[in-house]
Structure formats: structure tokens, C-alpha cells
Image (spheres, rainbow, N blue to C red):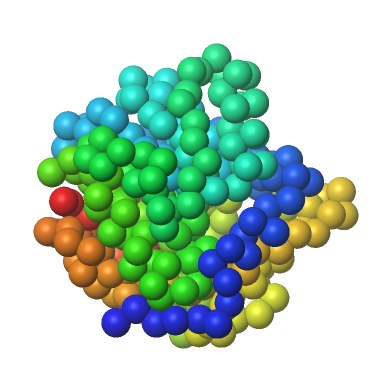
Length: 253
């Protein structure tokens, strides 16, 4: 059963201000992130003969650009205009041509034709911006709708099962690899985890996120119509539920 929160699913639009977005790549550290992933997503996409990718949470463009450079046909999408602006800037620097579109996932097929991709990615813990249960249900159905039969939907998230049960900890090996940023949750509850991002120049930013549990997301994907869902913890198929920092779920249409 997908739980609800009283917070807004549009909060991220206020939180991704331009000064924060300009520092996002400092948080990620593209070189270290690419090393930690070691082509994980490319391998899954190729194993399932996926060639067209909707990067639904493009952020500043890391996965869109890496996948495009590896030969995939990528459309970079995001709901935050500041993120898409940065994606375009990074694509120019990397000399990559990208189609970009600003979208609200809840009405994805109003901007992206149905059955137009064989893979949809929602990475960077982005799905947890959706507080409202119906927003999550609708988004998963929209992800399902834009996929061809046999297509993949790949969603990742922080390990909120571990955060809620055992408190926050991080190996600092995956996703957010920047050495000049201090990240930790200022508050933790079943309704919201509010992260604080403190940078070396003294600037501080926040993200308010809904702690989607692993089973909750799996059930939501199956309810949306996906035939099969499998999981990885820190990119490993075998893992202890509370050990990984990040969980990746792959759903087959």
C-alpha cells in the first residue's frame, strides 16, 4: 500500500534554486560517480536491447550525457527549468546533442507520446520528491504508458528502510561523491526526510523528500502494470535490506 504525506509534490520547484543547481555537479563529482557506477545502467539497458531512453529526472545531465556518448538515443527531461538549463550547458561542454523537454511526470504523456521509448530512467533519488500517494501512482502509470512492450523502467532511491529504522549513515561511495559537500538529514520521519547540503563556500541548501520504502515502490510498480520487478543494493543483486546506501529497482513492462 502506498502511503500519503501532507507535504506538496511541487516543493522541489522552490528548492532547486539556481544557486543550488549551479553547485549540483560539485555534489555529484561526475568522474567519481561514473567510476562508482561502472556502466551499471548501460549494461542493464543493453542486456534488454534498449536503445531509446527517456531520462525523466535528468538533473544537470550526468546520465543523459553519459548514455548519449555511449550510443543511446536519449531525451533529457526534468520538471525544474534550472536543471534543464544546466543540462543543456553541460551537453554543450561535452559536445553532445540532446533533446530536452520540461515535464511534470504526473502528466508525462501530454509532453511525450505513449509507447515512444523502450526505457525510462528516474534516477538520483528523484522519485522521492513525490509526497502525495496519488502523484506517485499516477507517475508510475505514466512511466508505464510511455514505454513500448518489453521496455524497462529504472528508479533509484536512498535506502529509506535503513534511514527510518537505523538512522542515517553513508559510505560516501555512490551517487553523491563530491568531497567538498557535507550532506545529512536535519529531520527524519515517516512523512519527510529533510536533507541539508552544506558546501565549502559556506552556502547551505535543503531538499525535502518522501521516504519511499523498498517494498512500497515495488508494489507501486506492479500495481501500475509492470510484469516483473527486481532490485539492486549499491549496484549488487544480492544485498542485505538495510546495508546499501542506495536501492535501484528495475521494472519490466
